[in-house]
Amino acid sequence: MPNAPLNQTALDQLFLAAHTHNAWIDRPVSEELLHQLYDTLRMAPTSANSSPARIVFIKSKGAKEMLLPALMEGNRAKVMAAPVTAIIGHDLNFHEQLGKLFPNAPDAPNWFSDPQVAQTTAFRNGTLQGAYLIIAARALGLDCGPMSGFDNTKVDELFFTGTNVKSNFICSLGYGDPKGVYPRNPRLSFEEACRIE
Image (cartoon, rainbow, N blue to C red):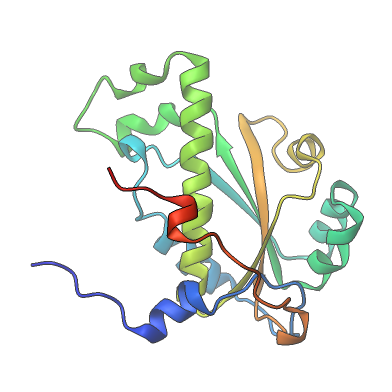
């Protein structure tokens, strides 16, 4: 039986009325909610169930201060004020987990033996999982402030040393202060962005 469409309230919360947040109210985000967030987003699809996203939730003052020098000046205050900032990365060696994650194809790890194929797959699917994080966070009542203004190399050195994980983008999470939201900017119309063939 087909799924029923979400109601307008749900669509507004996930997409139509949701904004990127730049300011935050002083309300903590619990570790339990972060577990629930990951347990929600991990169920969304990736190629061969590859699940390459690796996420560091920056919550403590010490971790925020460690992240600070890697951020562009305009993002520093936002990150310090946010209850949590997630670093969304992707594991270039994700295929080592495919025996567990995709057991119906025992040769699946070999599909990604070419480093370029592995890198492309990890980046694409890790990015997808980062988008799922935003949607799942909004579904769980959180606001999001995704951003890309940071030094990836420095972030990788600080938080992913000794791993094959590379950072993609960061996303602050919490309960947004409406005073920090910009007016809604225009979007491209269907005719400008799409075609049907």
